[in-house]
Length: 350
Length: 196
Image 1: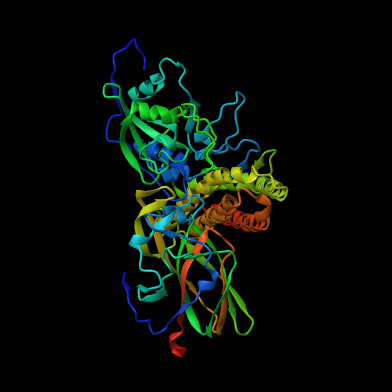
Image 2 (image 1 turned 45 degrees about the vertical axis):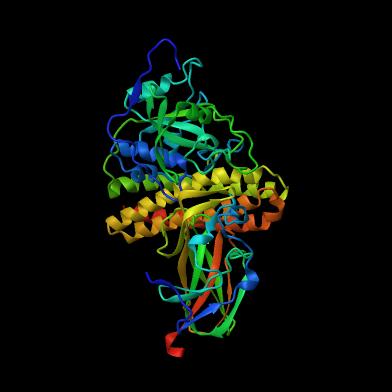
C-alpha cells in the first residue's frame, strides 16, 4: 500500500457483478461474461458469436484461463479479441507497474467504474474448494477495494460461486502466488500468477443480432475453418494438432497430455457457447436448420470431453492411452467436419 | 418426479446385472472421502445423501438395482464393456449415470439375428450442472466430496437417462461407450409391452 496517501474505498457503482456460468466454460469466459452483463449485453451473443480452431505449439500454459491468442508485432496478446472476433471486445494483460504501490492500477480502474479481472491461486482463497489444498491458476472479478477496512470485493461465478469480501492480505497472497507445481493438479499449477490482471474494454455496443448479422459471422467462421493458413487454424490446423498429439503420445512425451487439458478447455468452451447461441437463435427465429447446426457444434464440445478426460486420466503414461486418444481424436475430427458443414449450410440461408 | 425406494419390481422392467463390470468408486463416506475417485480430481458423491447400497430404487417408475455403497467399486467407468442381457424385446435401455463433464457417445445394441445398432447415450456433468440432455435428476448429494474435505454448495448429481431400442428384434447384449468420462451406476431394460 502506498504510504503517501490516505486509505480510501473504491467501489463500482450499482449492484455487485452478476455471475455468469455454463458447465463447459472456464473462469475466462465466466469473468468476461460478468463484465459484459454489466455493460447491459447478453454474454452469449458476444462470446458465442465466434468459433475458431487455433493451436499455438509451445504456447499452452498450465492455467484454467489459457486461451490461444496470436501475439501482435509487439508481442502483446488480446484475449478479448480472441474470445469475440466479431465484436470490439479487447483486453490486455497488465501487472502493477510500481512495486511500492501494487494497488494503483486497481484503484484507477475501479475509480473509472470498471471491473478488474485478476489472476489468482485457488490455494489461498477461502471460498475456493482448493483452499489450503491445491494450487491452481484461476481468474476472479474484483469490484471493490476498501483500504480503510483492508478488504477486497471479489466475485467468482465458478461453483461454488462467491460474491463478497476477503482480507487484502489474503487476496494478495493469492494474487502474488508463485503457484508452485502441485502433484494434485497437473494442469493448472506450476504457473506464476505474478499479480496479472486483465483490462477489458468494449469499444462499441454490439448491434442487435439479426439473422443477416449472424449469417455474416457464420460465413466468416466457416471460411476460417476451411481455409488453410500458415498457423494451425481451422480443420487443417486441427489435423496438424492431432497428428502432433498422437506422435508425442506414441513417443511417451509426458508433457503432451498436461497441455491437452488446458488447451482443450478453451476450444470446448468456445464450441459450447457457439452451439448454444446458434441453437437459441434457431429456436427464436423458427429456423430448424440453424438450430440443428448449433446442436452439431455442441457435439464438438461434447467430443472434446472424451479427449480431454482420457488425456487427463492418462497424463502420466501417454503411451498407455495412445489408442484411446487416437479414438477420441477421430471422433472429434468427425464432429468438427460435420459441424462446419452444418454451419455452412445454415449460413447460406441467413 | 416419483423417486421411491421399494422392493417391488415394476412389471415390464428387467434390471441388468452389471456387478462383474464395476471398476470405479464414485461414492464415498464423509469420513473416507479419499476413497472416492469419480473424476481426475478425486471428487465423489456423498453416500449419506444416496440410497442404501444394493437397494431397489425407482426413478420415475423405473426400477434400478442401486450399486453397493462404500463397499468397493460402485459404477462402470465406460471403456467399451460388453453387458449380457436376458434375451428379449425391449423398447428402452434406462441408466443411472453421470459424466465427468457433459458428453455423448455411442452405445452398441446387439440382437439375436446378428444385427447391431448404434445409439447415443447422452449424460450431463455430475458437478454442479444442469440436465443438459433432458435427463431426470435421480439422486443428488448437496455437497461434493474432495479427497481431503467435504465441500458445501457444490452438488453432485446422478442422472436417470434412457436410450431407445428401435429394432423390432430380440436384444442380446449392450456394448457401453468407449469413453471413460461416462459412468454407469445401474442399467434397466424396459420390455416391449405388447410382448411382455
